[in-house]
Length: 84
Image 1 (cartoon, rainbow, N blue to C red):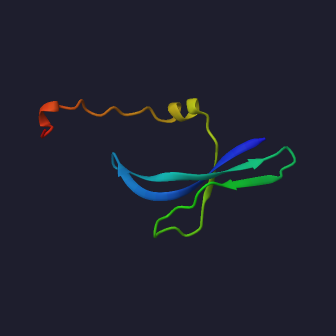
Image 2: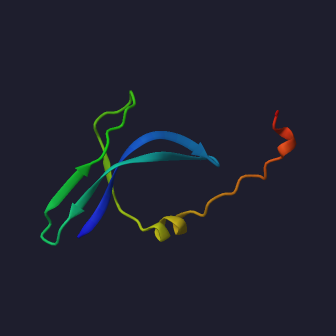
């Protein structure tokens, strides 16, 4: 059985000069060996821009997600900048 994530394009943003989309996950779609599909919706986006449309992406393992884009580390925090 193949699993897919049901996602909503929550917002657009720019990162390092590239336009990107933040996807929020709202359910799962399964396809069995006979091609039959089952959908489980876990939540519905609560934003003014919600238009009822979702997109489906093949579910990735945690290892695949880590390989896709390495996490960028923030600069070390200078504790002297904290006002308290």
